[in-house]
Length: 102
Image (cartoon, rainbow, N blue to C red; front, side, top):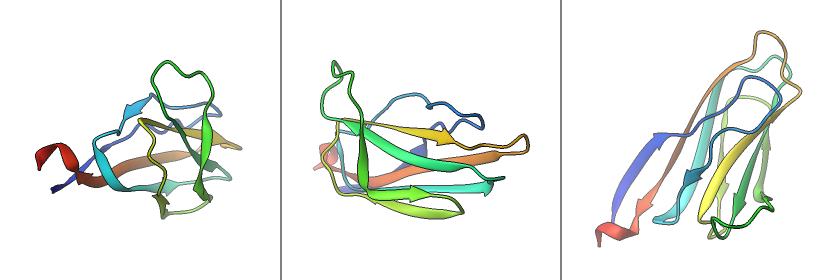
């Protein structure tokens, strides 16, 4: 296993970012930082790519710079922004251990 980290899209308006495949990652974490201006970020996942229903992770939400643990075995993640103001400007990363490199 090796540690892997990459950008995950976070929108600066009230909408969801692009879907990020994360099925090969174990012990996942999402870090978000920047100018929040009232925004809330919810990390959502789904078990299979054909699913249309998304579930918020048990790690909670972020309203300021921080890290959320994603203990669920989701195949895909996305970040959903709500309450964003005009100057919201956020950056996000997903990290975990790549089990496909064993």
